[in-house]
Length: 110
Image (cartoon, rainbow, N blue to C red; front, side, top):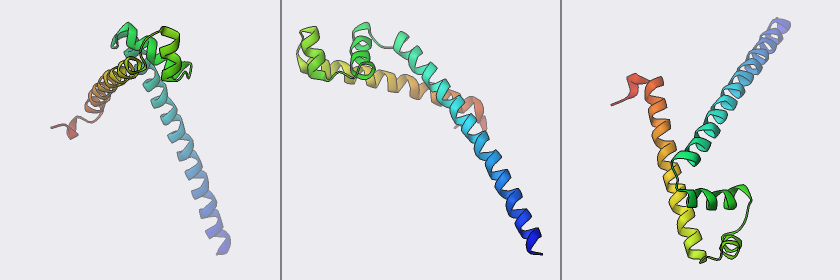
């Protein structure tokens, strides 16, 4: 009897391992989709100035003060522009996610 219990445990462990691999692959695919959508939103949904500052801030890791000095603009302008760009991206991505979820789960839409 103990060996049967062990085999069940081993089978369960294998099943859980396969499940974890599948979930990981789905998460990777979801992350890839999110990255594509973010790049698309950066190209199409923010102003050129917002894109420039967002890429300097997030892409190059510059501080707002460094960006202001480099572009010879006020730090508060950098801050406001980045914030507006972030908000625009959030709205675009939220709308895209909402539309995606409605297409996948139409029974849960109002």
